[in-house]
Every structure is written in C-alpha cells, then in structure tokens.
Length: 162
Image (cartoon, rainbow, N blue to C red; front, side, top):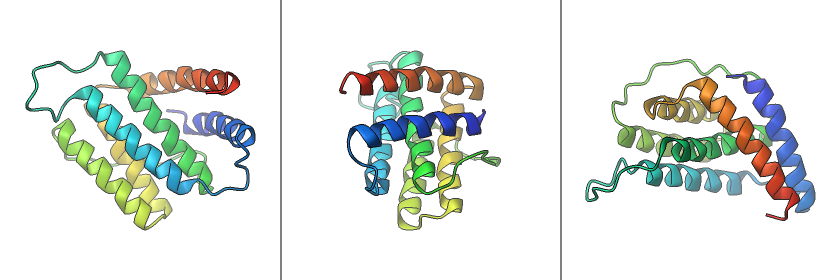
C-alpha cells in the first residue's frame, strides 16, 4: 500500500473539511479518535461476527470494504493531526484467529493510543487495523483502490454540503 500517496490524499480532504467548517485552528484529535471508534463499530456491525444470537448473514463484501476504508481515512487523518505522515513501517505478526478477537484488539489499541499519543501507539493501532482487514479478506491493493474511490466520494460530499 502506498501510504505516502494516501496521506497526501487525506491531507487534501482534511484541509478542505477544515476550511469549509472553519476548523483550521481547532485541535480535532479527540473527535477523530471518537470517529475512529464509531467507524470500527460500524464495521463490526456490518460483519456481524459477534452477533451469535442472529442468523442474518454479514453485509456484502463491498459494503464491508467501504466501512473498513472509512477507518483508514480516520487513521490517516489522526496521523496527519499529530504530524506523522509519510511511509509507514507496519510489519509484524498477529496471533488473532477470529475477527471478533481482532476487533477487540483494535479497540484496545485505540484506547492505548488515546491514553498515550505516541508514534508507537499510533503504529500499533494501524497494524492491528490492517491485520483486521487481512482477516476480513482484503488485500492491501484492494484497500488502496477502495480508499481512492471513497476519498473521491468524500470530496464530492463536501462540495455538496454533507
């Protein structure tokens, strides 16, 4: 995945949003962290991986990918907010065997990051989230393509007063 390219794209979108909503001087980190939690929850809801009481199937793959990419948008935006943009080193193994356990690991890593906003805790969130994407069956190329598509939609939404 070309993270440098994605950071540039996210920076343009963030700038547009901040200018349109008069937020250029506001620190948005707490709002972005909460938005990330919400997006992770929406993703979990679409996968239905935790809904042991229901027989309804997961949403279609495209819907789940779009929800996953929404989280990528906020991860990139958080990195930009804290000045951590560019190429990321996100290597590492992960032991989770189920999406449910990995969702919990992602939530825990976001909580750790919120308490200690360091580059290490930020990278840990990104690693856990990307591993979740792998568990959901998404390749990095597929995520990048979906990110580019959703970024265009987000620009259009801003132009339409979303």
